[in-house]
Length: 342
Image (cartoon, rainbow, N blue to C red; front, side, top):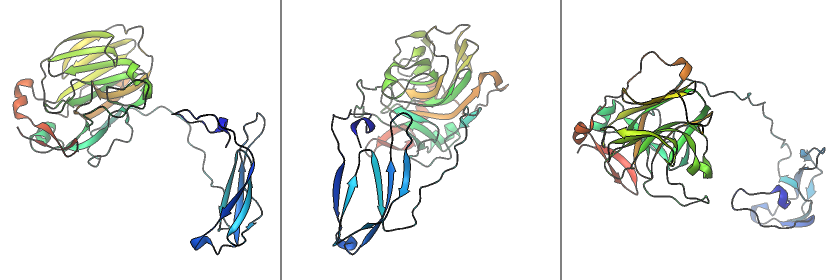
């Protein structure tokens, strides 16, 4: 393949030159007795107006004394086989693109332990199903939750290191996104969030904008920000939460305004959104830095068709009650095995 038709995402491909050439193939072992190979050729054309040809059958190639010579042109793919009946694969036309259907919810109970949800895509960190036991399952009334489990910064593939794990799905404008969250008191993150209209992922994740609702258990503070890096703070204040306690975070964006709720308490609302707010974007869950952070009962709905009544699936514990709820202990190469009572 020519250089211009063999580009790599990272690292970039160094310059090279390739020319048409003859290639000699020597067959040995179990293949030494082959006397003929069936031959198909695909010619990849990149010139405007030209079309490519795929898997066109050629005359069989004769193998003499376990050896054959084949001419290879540039941007040509050849297929050799002992099977004469091979054909180009067929596929049906993919369905037309359409918006992800709402409402959507996931309580993460149908996942195997260690499995990730089908529709959430991590941009940094790793989110997997964790089995709850003892008091934790009593608190959540469910046997497992989705947790961000990476506690140390990973190898860096991007120009700038990504320090805030988060996972995203969809592409919406006016939505309500909620999830019950828990920050354990051991090996934990310093903050946890739900978000809407996130506009970036991948290596650009560090500069993602959107609307983020944060909780910080160490300081019993909350914040609403216009970016993942928390450089554009919209509102903040006190909210008694603490560690090892489940609480529900809800963000609703509708007709240019927003509402942020912690549990049943509205902590922020505005009739206007910041001018830098993306018009559409991902819904997301995440943490301030690498550390344990858990989520349950994710729910995303159109803000134009909100249910009349919230479906509260968790029995919430206050910070004062946190001493009797489970804490997460990290065991065996930084993976979570269970939740134990304090």
